[in-house]
Length: 125
Image (tube, rainbow, N blue to C red; front, side):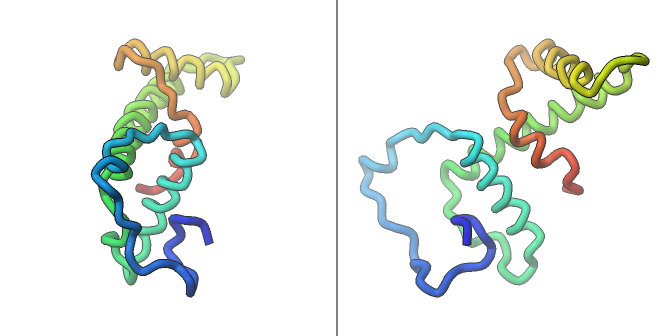
């Protein structure tokens, strides 16, 4: 099972590994694969009424999820605005580029979580 699956294998550790204070201070760089695992965990945990949502350490995952959620929601709004401005003959790629431009003009930074948006854009939540 993936690391963030809502089902646990028989030999999975019951407690998270103990971290030394020095190890906690290390800042982790998130990559798209890490983001997708985090998104999958959030989707599976939130939909699983039996397991509940108190099954993961909070720390950096909670902070990263907050950033993903906030920026993806803002990009969804930019994409909707770009769709409303869509002209005849424009492709989906044109709309996506326009959405990136709208996001940049509103937020004053580039949208770098397109991989997360692709996973989350059709989710009900």
